[in-house]
Image 1 (cartoon, helix red, strand yellow):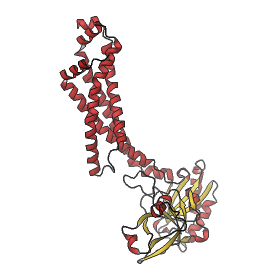
Image 2 (cartoon, rainbow, N blue to C red; image 1 turned 60 degrees about the vertical axis):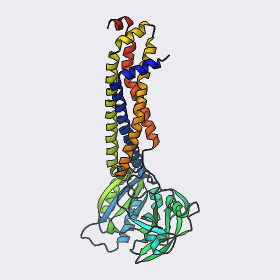
Image 3 (cartoon, rainbow, N blue to C red; image 1 turned 30 degrees about the vertical axis):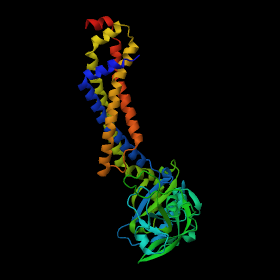
Image 4 (cartoon, helix red, strand yellow; image 1 turned 90 degrees about the vertical axis):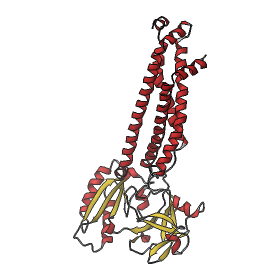
Length: 414
């Protein structure tokens, strides 16, 4: 049986060592739990899904060659898309004004009333505006959950202050506007410039299409986006998005350059990258931060374990005589081991309880100063507690095992 009185007595006589262990665990716990939370947030961000077949998409950003006048830009764009679609291995090709993870963004307000004021202020729902043709859904690989896509005769060249009469919404945007009711066939109102609004009929709903940038602290894949049946203008640069299998992608990349070199007038390629590389580059800082925090956590755990190990080892050496007496009185090695493992456990529990208060205080500080978007969830507190309690027992095990192997005669001589 465990001698509780001897455990309490030992802790009372070694107050400084006990205090140091409690404080060490508390500080480590406060830092670890918040660091794990921040790592979790960054991991959710970098693994967020766009709703597209990212691994099959090639993003080629093009713009007119400086000094070359484009007489009929829309004809050039359509000719390029036909040439790209004919490349062996290409499943589909479209022109978009922006792509997920591309940064920047084109936004607009939509409302359920024809008044202009709600579109500017509180009653509006802000959405990301994608411009795409009849092949856009197939090219992106987004899932249509209701309604239909665009027909070729419904797609028009982009023109300022002109809003097409139909559009496709993401499920999140449709739910935000219409709740559980079907959005297909419903009318929304978008600003068309010059103080006017245009009624737009929703003809389809897609599962998801992430906006070009991920908001700070955003970990949800819910994205309020709208697709309008328009071919984008070269004025702001056009994204030629080509869909091909991963095995065909290298060959397709080479042939895309050759096809665009024949464009009339010639276009300059600003960038050419698979969407997976676009995503990787976009989240480079988040990954660096996550790795840095992971290294800090590992270093913190090593230092904490070393501190507990050192204090416990000194503690055990001071009690060799006492251990020998207990062995001489019949205590087994297992009983000695369990006794000293349990002796340190109340200190670890105390450190975790104190660390919990410090952890929530630290979380509030990070939230107030903009380093976090929410308070520390209890899940990370539980994970941090489990890690520190386990680490404490692991650090104590070796000194306790050494104490349990001391022979009674040797201990009594010392």
